[in-house]
Amino acid sequence: MPKKKKKLTKAEKRQRAIEEKARAKKEIQEHPVLFGTYVVLRFLVVAVMVLQITNREWYDVFLCALTLVLFMIPSFVERRLHIDVPNVLEVIILLFIFSAEILGEIQEYYLIIPFWDTILHTLNGFLMAAIGLAMVDILNRSRKFRIRLSPVFVAVVAFCFSMTIGVLWEFFEYGMDIFFHMDMQKDTYIPAVTSVLLNPDGRNAAVTVPVESVAINGQPWPGYIDIGLHDTMKDLLVNFIGAVVFSLIGMLYIMGRGRGKFAPNFIPRLKEYELPAPKAEGEPNLLTPIPLEGPEEAPGPELFDIYTRDGRRTGRTAPRGAALAPDEFRLGVHVFLHDGQGRFLVQKRAASKRSRPGQWEITMGHALAGESAVECTLREVQEELGVSILPENLVKAYRWLEKGPQMFIDLFFARLEGGPGAITPQKEEVAEVKWLTTAEILRFVQALPARTDDYKTVVTQYIKACLSGGAQESTPPAKPGCIFCQIAAGQAPCYKIYEDDHTLAFLDIAMDAPGHTLVIPKHHEDHAVSSSPETLAHLMEAVRVISRHYIEDCAYDGVNILNASGAAAQQSVPHLHFHIIPRTKGDGLNTWPALGRHETDLAAMQQKLTMLKEDSK
Image (cartoon, rainbow, N blue to C red; front, side, top):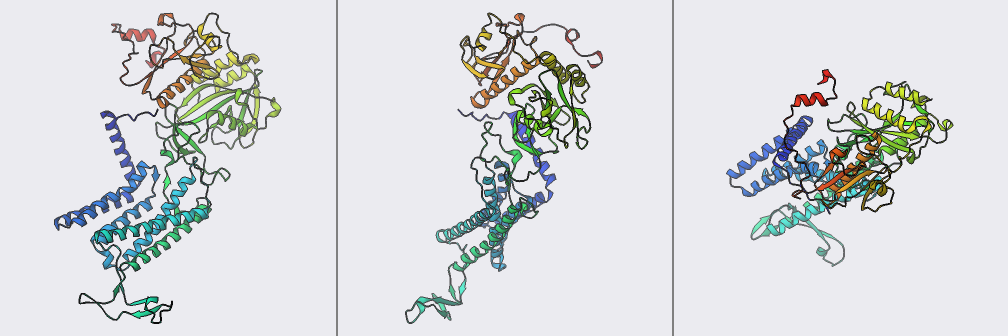
């Protein structure tokens, strides 16, 4: 069931208006020529409209209003369709509209300047071929359709699109002339007629007869009127020329893999960083971009996904080294490699590395666009050490928010198979490697630069609890009599909602709220306070995944996430668990406890509870 679009509150509308105003101001600063052109042309159109209103020329007033509407098309395409219209193309489109409607029709340039109509139709063929090429390029980038056209066929399609638009416009002019008695297809005097009908012998051979005199209703005319035939064919011919010119330019541009400075000024492109995120992992939408040249071609600049502060992909990408907005983040990985016998691998970074050259570190790297943290880990280990590790040998222990470079760091522990002889360091990445004992790696962790205390604590506790002295990661035994342990072991029934290697989620049989879900670790932990960091990490990740599923896929508006730790906190089952209660607006539930009001002195309470040092209060 698709989720209904929520109405914005007044505060949200005000915030959106502020954001739109800030974005408009930024665009003006970045594109002053485009903005200046737009303002000048709009001013001129409004001035002409006012003049025509005073002259009671209502058709011209309509043309002015139509021009103002047409001026908004490029902006509409950019904002609503997520297509970037190059500044050069946008300026030409604005000038084209102004020249056709205001100068051509109202100021009668079609009559004053002999080739005015010819120039505009040639330009129309040129521009429509550019737009046709852009449309094919957008489909060429669609993962859904998998269209793959050669440069020649792209040029042919662009040419046909341009000619089709030209023909449709001539149909429009013909319809306006027939039904509204206008003269959009300009008539021409013909000084001579060539036709087989004029052959005196009745043969199929054309004969040319000069038109020496024509009189209509007693009025002499300088020649025979062709009723717009010459104008139509001339327009199509110059449209053909414009279409051919840009189709050839576009073909050469594609054959050059996007090199060149001229063609990009006329080809609209998808705004890849503004595309809506796919509905689900591996399910891209129609406009999800892929490289034009395909995966087999030489790679361009490395791209990485942009994430929100809560760790969700935005669907946008940015090249490596690009500056991010304050609320934008990318994804990286840190990997502690061990042999399962209490030894850990560290590596000395190559002197050519931009970050921390020559320093001893663990394996680390940045996730590329479309890459998960696990995929990034497997790739980085392979690239730097020449080792393939099995996904089942990976354990995610922690997610660290590194605010400096605005990056989420997923921390993994991975067991290497094959022993030290399987390692082949890549000289461009790694100068040398060495193995450390458990005691040495613990000291090494404490000395690592640019790590938080929480980071070092998680790593240290995991090594001591799970990997010290060759101990393998193990699952604590089930607690006798624990109903949740029995459910996790499959010894008691449940209405299962979600399951992974570490957690299980099922519906609460209390039936107190629709969708009330319990999320538990598969091994026994009494409560959150006594739980290990890695258990809580697995559990909270499951809670996040389930909550997101309820909101995005099940039409809920929000969730309550609750936990009770200890009997005094009303924990009913002494097995660590979190409650997820899906919520909809107006469901009548009140899951927020009514605590009343206390009269405790807050300063005294702070003194009792604070974990801060005296100088940090």
